[in-house]
Image 1 (cartoon, helix red, strand yellow):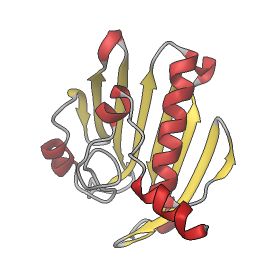
Image 2 (image 1 turned 135 degrees about the vertical axis):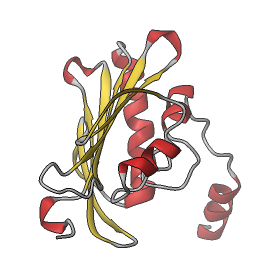
Image 3 (image 1 turned 180 degrees about the horizontal axis):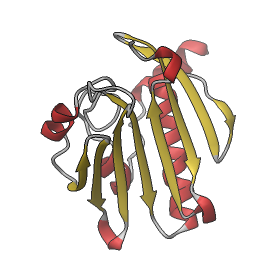
Amino acid sequence: MALLLFQQACNSPQKARSSTFTDLVTEKEGIFRGVELGWPLEEVKKVETAAALVHDDEFGLVYKLELEGGRYARIEYFTDPERDNQELISIICNVHLNDQVEAGDLYREMEEHLSNMHGVADGGFGDRKWVSSRAGRARIETRLKMLPGKEGISLNFFIPSEFREK
């Protein structure tokens, strides 16, 4: 019986993803949109080509990704202001959908995706946290939250300060 259930699970088609999810989560390698934490900002600029760059300074980059229906995502790539190396330490993506049902659906899609990447999360619906490690990094934390008003979601990938290279 267990073997039959396993075969059915393996043979069942993948659940279709929403267009918002596929616009946000590219097929590129990396922790988010083909980007890895620890990269120099110049590398981010080479990879982040679908969104419009709206701000660029020594502390980071801000992009706006237009989504269908007048919705958008603001994607922020930050460095550590106390260091001169301009290595990426945090990625924040706020997705503004202006619809609570769609935001809840996207939250569940993202939660499933992040659980597949990072394993079991702490917290409950609306505020989840994953702790994982990636090649060359001792620890990475990932947060998924509902935005105030529950009409969008917020993602944050970051290296905690105690795990940043000195």
